[in-house]
Image (tube, rainbow, N blue to C red; front, top):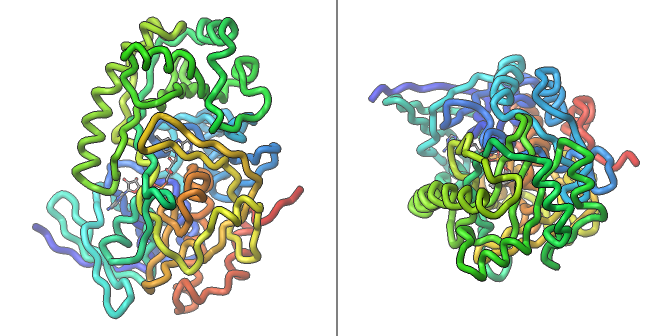
Length: 456
Ligand SMILES: Cc1cc2nc3c(=O)[nH]c(=O)nc-3n(C[C@H](O)[C@H](O)[C@H](O)COP(=O)(O)OP(=O)(O)OC[C@H]3O[C@@H](n4cnc5c(N)ncnc54)[C@H](O)[C@@H]3O)c2cc1C
């Protein structure tokens, strides 16, 4: 084993939607920043076939901008994004090419001066007197001790904060149930027109359960009107197949996402119940189960969904998607009552607006509720019980219902950018992230185009 030591101002652990903007914002604001990612590429769930949801609110107003918008602009320049299109269910859908995304993310990080270490996993932490002092990275036989003034945990599951012993919550209130993971894959050979004709002929296929609040016009005419579409439907077919014992997944609806490649749909449809994605053994079980569910699901799609008769697997994404695990306790916690009230506090570092979207981790259903834009307080990114530790992405200090909304990738990017600016200012002023004047953070965010309030 080779032992090395490094010193940075800021270490961002996890190169997904939370971590990348955190690292870019920190570096742009003068901090010597290291971004550590266990995979060989940047993106996290930006690389698993999902569309970007809710840059726009339910009325069509843009709520997410800043680095998240720069990312979309860059993708568009590469011919790898179709921009934002309104959706009656998901507020808005932004379809992009997940491979070109890897190029764009590297470009953006490198231009900002972020130092990147790939194939490096944070495997340990060193806490001294309530302050996170260093983390240990491991990769390819290298063991590296990295000191920093601020660490931003953007690992999704909050692995760094967990190892450091920070406080966290898990699961829905009262039940503790976690949203289930899904193994994403894509199929080619889809006859879109035939699929739409099926939905035309059987409009009842678009009737969803009464726990799902759908906006007016979420039907086949909407899908025909835009290339940026995601079909959540086929409940009737799934119910019939389940009754006959022919449904290979524990879901009551199908989710097909249009890809930028002709005839390709990305499928968000496997479901794995009773899984804790932060538990190595559960995670392994879900990955294996996911792979087998995919083949059975594709066979079912070929047999029963008009338009998919000749579909074939084009991609199985590198690892299973985890919707929900640890949510860490911050100086502030954003709670359901605040987002239902559309509260935008004075210390907001950005806005969210995506629907409350809770997939049942114990059954086949989903709860969807439409909400207005809300503000995310800076304190959600700052650990309550540990100095030197911040959060970005879905492990931030949000209650379970808020997380079901703020977990979408554009909102995770907003949280990341705010955390990155806060961390850089802490370093600049030689203080803790908790002591940074939020007004100074907001001035910088505003100048970078982040939307901090309703402009309508
Ligand atoms: C099935 C599914 C469908 C979804 N659908 C959508 C959708 O349609 N649109 C949308 O916008 N959002 C969607 N989401 C939500 C969204 O993808 C996630 O909530 C979001 O990606 C979380 O971002 P993050 O940066 O916190 O975590 P991640 O995207 O998971 O990124 C975390 C990164 O940290 C790295 N990492 C983890 N541990 C370590 C470690 N110890 N050391 C170093 N690196 C580490 C990982 O490799 C990864 O790159 C979906 C999620 C799932 C699971």
